[in-house]
Length: 313
Image (cartoon, rainbow, N blue to C red; front, side, top):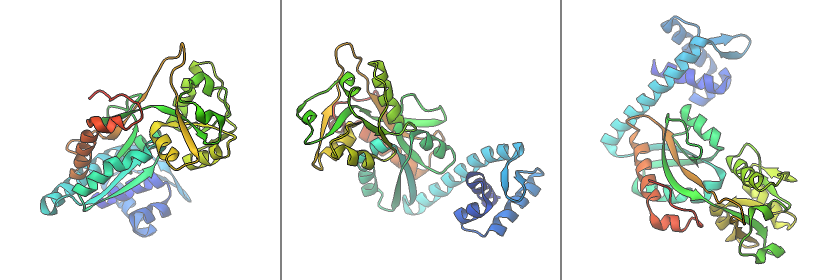
């Protein structure tokens, strides 16, 4: 039954019999047969069929929701028994918003040193993708914005508060400035992340509060692409202080703190780690959350984050 549920979940995710079979490492006829056997066992039709996959039936959606919980509990049990036998082993998949990618090694380096038999996969994802893929068991945890707070079905631990910098080319006359206001940023030629990124929505919010219309000539979902445009000197960009420190240290770029101007309100965003709200967590995930809690409480760590306050614990 467990194997059939895993194949059914893969089909619901991939929405294609061939891709689902490939995802779980079986042939397409084997997956189709397993789903049909599951339907026979449960006495309901789970999938609308035609010449191709046409979606889940209402009963199929209910089975999918329950199957996610069953498979999550089964994996947790397997990991717990494996940890009893041989310590922590296995795979850990972490989704990270692009602006937090430079800091993720602060979490994973000490974690893997303590648990060398755990393999870690870091995946760049938007904030909405992280939450959705945690729910779908495609990610074990994520580092993302906690403002607004994720749904109650997600456990969360704050790590740091994100502040913002203007990233400019070193030969730009702005590079001599030691600070800049949001009102000034709104008057510049900007290249920014795409609107599906939470960081972009935060930047838009700050600029809207000072009456600036946001209409960048260049948008990208890649920070590398934005940096390439900033290096030309024709554009500037708004990035997190963590990202600014990473790029400015490479040369050719200067990061200028964005501070509230007269009449502007100062804000920062809380970034933290999220995971499914299930008890108990798998041993590997529990160990990661313990490492994240230690990191989030480190005063030294927050002192290196570029001016943000420590989040409330």
